[in-house]
Image (cartoon, rainbow, N blue to C red; front, top):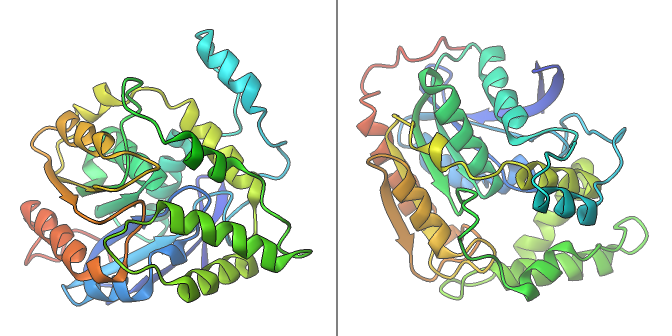
Length: 308
């Protein structure tokens, strides 16, 4: 594992491919670590000629945790938002986007293709809108715009997501059972659900840095982000929006709204896909990312980054 000082914190990162290849930065979702971008998926991208960089967002994995801040009071947070107030939160999506830009700085990378999933898609959107000179192309996967008129997750899905998990140190089987049940719930029905792979992934995340309060602070960051459609309308990078037709956590309409909000964005709804990225789709998604990256005319010139 590598660590870099970025935006005043430490970010854990790794990469695949050659340092001289065109860089793709992968941004992880809520409460998850960089290993959710599975190595076989990264390999699909490196085979297409990219250097793939993935990292742990703040408050996850091997990156800086913000444990000095208490978990947010969501009741108070909701009341303040409904009253039109700006809640005081430990950090925002803009801070997390600044982390990613600072990581590129630390690696000597001037510009990169940016791919984000779920909350990571929101972070990637902020990067593309606020730092257009740094983002060659944008791929937003299973994400949303913050438009308050969009449909929300079902009450069952929200309840499962927000239910406190057993402590994995005291009750590892209880922890795994609850988290696997949620993963199965949000997965699409069009592809097999690999329980053994989920178990291994969750176990590895706990080993690398379990941070349940970090996920709560990230939820607070998303909650105060507001409606980003005006910002999305300023994005000039070639953009691809990918969304699972069966997503119960961030419904399909959110992907359609994202694509409609970004000028000239391509939209790729995927039948049978939920709020996950099954291995059967790795090659198709990687090729779609390659397609939007080539719209940025970054090939064959590899001079878009100062390699490290």
